[in-house]
Amino acid sequence: MATQGPETAAPQRRSKISPEREQEFYQAVLDLLQEGGYEALTIEAVAARTRASRSTLYRQWCTKPQLVVAALRSCKRPFELGGIDTGSLAGDLRAVAAAVGEAGEVCGGDTALVYALGHAALQNPDLLQALRAALIEHEVKTIQAMVRRGVERGEVAADNPAVEFVPTQLIGAMRVRPLLEGVPADREYLTRFLEASVFPALGLAAR
Image (cartoon, rainbow, N blue to C red; front, side, top):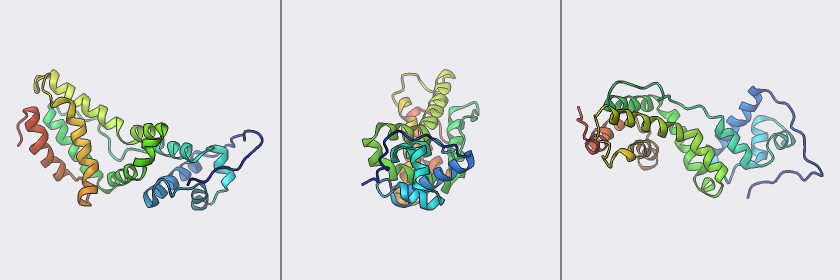
């Protein structure tokens, strides 16, 4: 059960903390989530990890969900897909596989967060939205844009039913392999996945 904040007669005023100190709190939250999961995370544990007082944390974030949401929103993506545009859909998707693969264990840490927060996020809409925004939405939108460019270039038929599933397939393979096989989805694995599953469905030629 999550620890509740101290009762007060009136709302507490938020004190100023530096961006660097705020990031220390967020990193402690993310580390503790990966170590023990959402249910085991407490304000006390964050305070101890960062050598801060509970009251400092409660003044900034009134509840554990608020603190976790803020920490998720502070996440920096371990890889950047927005600048990829090779001129072909197959090239773009291979570049995605390369970018994700080069992120290696860092990306695996993100996947651990997804697993740690999975059940709690389904019960808390704000937490679920923050998890999606931090770790999933950008990648989905970027891959959708790549597929859209491929359709506009005539590489893939607009009515191909596989078009809508490309982000789900690729992100699913990236996030699920650590759970199924205990290793990150590296470049070689994702490239093989593309050429064996995604490209045939889209009518693209594999190498």
